[in-house]
Length: 281
Image (cartoon, rainbow, N blue to C red):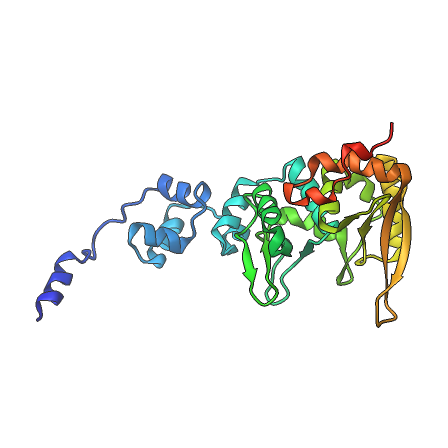
């Protein structure tokens, strides 16, 4: 027998060594730390089957839904029943109306939705701000080298299902009839940062993902919530018969829009501000 083999045998665990983890420790690992059976086995240096056997021996009842979740972060959020703050809800709504996408994974069975956000490299700081605001639900940013863009997605989590059911229908992003109940100043500012444009006497928001009838719902909601008047204008895509819509804010509504959103804009969107000297009394 080699010296290394003898050394390995001398430090191996005796077969009759008692499992060192108490019921209280296992419950804390499972329900407070959100560890999986494999992670617990690695933590204490035991086989996952041994951990499983003692979970049953101690009579610990695990939530079968939580037990199936592979992501440690999602498992912990689910155990703690973490909910969105009002600020996070506004950012989510503004992002979905803008460049964001709410969806469920196509290639695997997933009961829960997640949010995807992306921006060009010049707007990386804005995307980092979004990701920080959506902690602990957001994942790290990733770069698409071919398009020189950055993006991030959140974890798939039950709380996102509300927005999936609200905005996703028949395989596309839509505008719900009750969108007015989800709009506030921050949601409008995020939407404007994603898709807004400023001109000398008018501002606009691109809404090419939505039909004209959905744009009319947005126009009604903007007036109901902010008393902002907007016009829906259709444009034909160059070299195509496809049309898309823009929302235009003219005259007083142009100024009213900026009075709401300008104080909330991220510094990288300074060029989208109207400026106080442009406001009329």
